[in-house]
Length: 148
Image 1 (tube, rainbow, N blue to C red):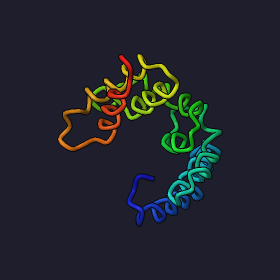
Image 2 (image 1 turned 60 degrees about the vertical axis):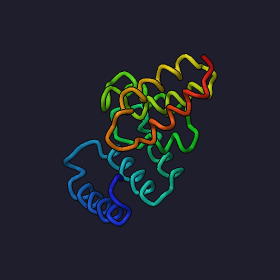
Image 3 (image 1 turned 45 degrees about the horizontal axis):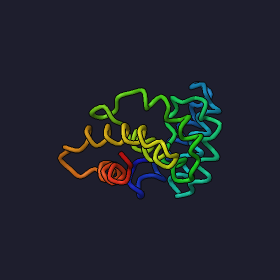
Image 4 (image 1 turned 120 degrees about the vertical axis):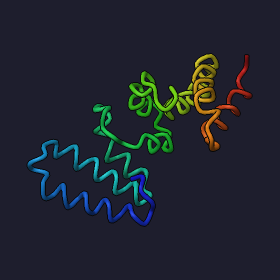
């Protein structure tokens, strides 16, 4: 799903062949099918289709669904459920994109203290990166808008 646009379809096609050939041996066939269906829709730019395919997998938080799909569709409750475990983990330099999305949701909900805490975590963790990080810019902007 993260491959370049010209590689996505062939990669996913190969995964489908492998899943079809070896799926019965691998177990978890239903989850694999849902993941692959969602991945194919995501690669085609169909966010709604991807979200619909992955929705049954949300309870299995360890599965690699693309949470930004649910963020783009404004499905905040589902997104919070998916990202709850990530918020308890340390990502790169102790922050994860889930922290940035949670900061934005907290700000939208009027929880300035939580939004500030999360935004500062992302800013502090990634602010000195050797390349610009768009999440840092968003968190700095958010911090400027939050009341003290």
